Amino acid sequence: MNPMLGSPFDSLVARRRREVTARVDELRDRALDLERQAVVDRVRTWSSMGTYEQMLRETGADDLEKKAMRLRRSAAELEMTLR
Image (cartoon, rainbow, N blue to C red):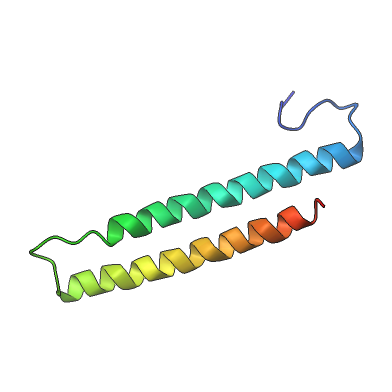
């Protein structure tokens, strides 16, 4: 038995709530991973400052942050269904 899904004797509402909560947690974890990757991509060294490669990395970091924001928005919308 999966502890996240609970007992088979739980109500359908409680089971659905746990499933949605698990999905929200998963979305937030993915968003956090993307944000961490964006921070890593923004790290500048003296040799890379102002280079085309650094500009591409920062553009990629912007894209990662946008994806993370979309994931967080999806998580928040999903969480609102629980209320």
